[in-house]
Length: 116
Length: 118
Image (cartoon, rainbow over all chains, first blue to last red; front, side, top):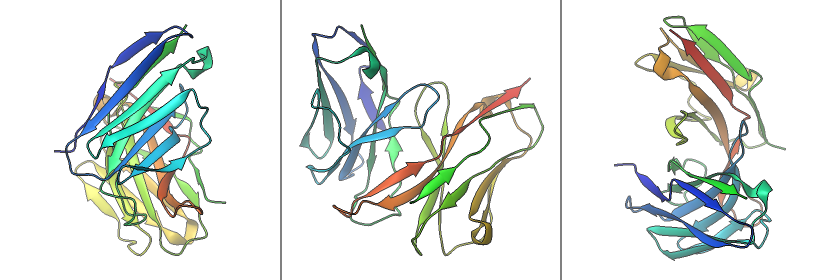
């Protein structure tokens, strides 16, 4: 079962709101990823967690704050976002990052975020 | 720098036609992996295939086939007898190590939007 579950599916928030996106996987994967995808563009990597530790931060603004409470769960906390942050936010997981380039990333269906 | 190029932005075909999606990559690594993903309108990226740099055998899975040629740095994807359900954006990706952490990440191409018309 290669399932990554993301909630909510849709989110509308104001620029002063605080919200969180949630991602869950039960495949025993030890690496989890957050991507941002604008319309007609490829996904852009934001963060990578490996064994529950932040491994990559692609210079993402601090208004995005990731959290990995355990190996199955990944959150993205949002605060004081801008309208240009409106996008599809995708979560992915893979067995681990240490194994190198062969890891397959499995994606969730994403959260469509609109910032008003 | 490592790079993936999908020169075809959008392709339209009529159902039952064959269609080939092109992917050209650049890498300095001798060992690397290439991937294809499908993204239907629902948003989820669906894994289709992984290929390592040492295996140049073509692969066939049902109506899908992949042609990997190291000599031309290409990893092309062909759909035979296309169907409306094949309509999606298709991404080619290359796995790259980040220098600081050693963690691997994907370098995505810009994607090819395939429209299959009934």
